[in-house]
Image (cartoon, helix red, strand yellow):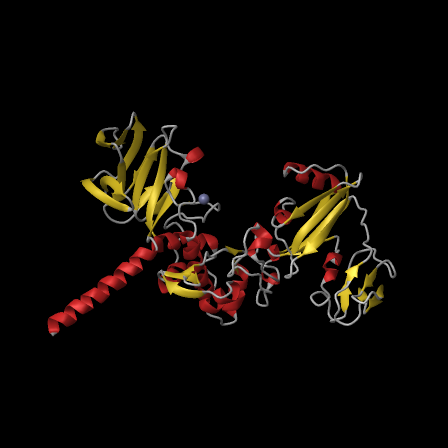
Amino acid sequence: MKRIFCSFFAFIVICLSSSASAAYTDIIRVGLAYGSTAKAVATIKSQSGFKLGSMNGLTFNSTTTTNETTLNITYANGIYNVTNSSGESIYTGENVATEAISGTTNFDGYNYYGAFGFNAESSGKLTVINYANIENYIKGVLPYEMSASWPIEALKAQAVCARSFVLGNLNKHKSYGFDVCNTTNCQVYHGTERADVNSDSAVDQTKGQILMYDGKLAVGYFFSSSGGATESNENVWGGTPIPYLRGVVDIYEDASASSKNVWSVTLTAEQIADKLKSAGYSIGQVADVKVTKRTEMDNVNQVTVTDTTGKSVVIENDDVRTVFGLNSIRYTINGDNSSNNNNSSSNGSTANAVYVNGSGVTDGSFYAIGADGSKAYIGSVNGKTVLTGSGTQKISLATTKTISSDSYVFSGTGWGHSVGMSQYGARSMANMGFTYTDILQFYFTGVTISQM
Ligand SMILES: [Zn+2]
């Protein structure tokens, strides 16, 4: 009886451990040098000396050790050569990997836990890869993505985001033999350089935790500031709507918490033409620039630029930010928010009024047509220019005012791509007493937090 029980128990343990480890890798391959930054000579240092060997998949196999504290790795004619600081060869092989005997390996001025792999590129130079345990990796990312002085619940939310982001981006740099690079292209990572008790604690307190939606990993996208509302993925990056990446009205973020999240950029007609041409668009002398479509979240989704010949260029999705070099997709042009007037309930302080705060807009210059065909003319209410529509019916502009100006003022709030978690919003929520789970479930629709 006892024997049966033990077998049964062992079976359970094996099943649990195999299912837990099979789901997601706990080793992240981080490219520290590759392509234009690949090394003719890769120099690594360790106070403790090195184990030398090779990688078998994600596992480092040590075949020998050395007390040398500085190693130089080069490649020629199919053979990797490891020399000491005196230039003496101490190891050669058809492949090579290293690991500090204890502690970290120093490479290019930063210290990293985990093994190092070196792969010759076609140039003969070396791709340098750090095989980092995911928890050490997140500790090396967190203080670069969010200030370690921010509240712990915001840091914990960021840790879960970063973990879920990297697991959603494995093999991003597959052609170079690693998962993620160590720059903003993926996530900034410099090993132990900015290790901090707060950020390390946030990683430890959320160890192995990831975002899940409908039983699958949810990729933890994040950005600096929403400025008032996040955005659904398809309105930024195009493609298929992802259910957990829905835009939310950000009732928590305090845009004034950072001056960089409230911004204004003035571009001349000539600068706008130059930016469009740089982005591959064909346009003549710019005569008009206006927002022609907003999302349900009131973010800019389409901008139309018209030149003096009447030719128009339509810019959509994230291009409305990147083509003009703006900080976010949440802005007005010359104070003109009028394109939102097809949604009478989201813009304006009363259900039956729509603000059109364009400079130079005069009484009677617009009228709106209600669903029943009735017209509502523009007027002034409480010092603000409004269209008084009929009830809550949708109204649309019958005429639009063309702003003729040599320069265009883009005024906005927010910073970044607007998809997923607002970091400033996370900070505000943490300051209000919300937990990291509250924060993540606010910004990622319908997610749960699970062990990887
Ligand atoms: Zn990258």
